[in-house]
Image (cartoon, rainbow, N blue to C red):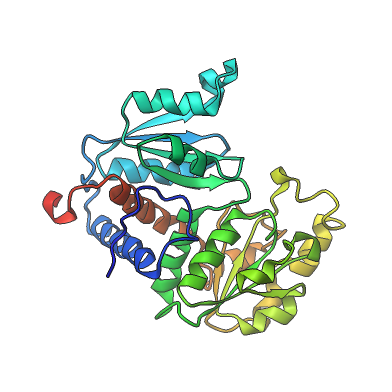
Length: 314
């Protein structure tokens, strides 16, 4: 198997099946050790992780921080609000000055698509994309793959339906790329106004009616309406109408396969894209997704920072 050899983790579009599986297998090792009581697996002892989040985040930011600390690394919590960016310093100058302090990796979230790629071209230290604009959110897609593999025997030929605000969702893009690479049969569903032009060119089936799609799929991944990216204005009549036609509700349950997996990257708008009873049902794997987020991010930090072997530190 070809191991992960890339300097940066900028997206899933160009990752091979072997690289995807290698990241997941390493994450499983970390998760197993944590479950056995190993709270600290210091493969990155002495390393410094800079968390550069230019957008609000709860799950991604916290899980990267927890992942770094479980690996023995120190973290620097960078905030644009408290930095010289408020004085007019450019992102490039900010990044170059931070790089001059010799940290080991940048974890970057930014509202502008392509920002991690831009910085990767002007810096020497590894960069992990924690979400950039409408583009990609690779660590989310990886934890989603890991979660599916924990509940299904394989991903190849699994039928996965991604529902909601596809046009504004970086989660949808990263999942489409990685799921297709793994051999899954992927479809998207949402209001026509929330489907990107020529989305079918990514090799996905397209639905605009949720009830017609649900019976055919093994995994249903719900997405949040991206209000902060302008996805409410003139995209649909009202939140009530959205919930009526594209929300996963009690009446949706009989339409789905008995062993369906229900997923959501969070944060959830309960009562809009997903009802409380469905989110908390026995088929929901939303909290396991969050748990796997720490393990996947441990794996990514370990790999891009060339950490010590797990066997060496246990």
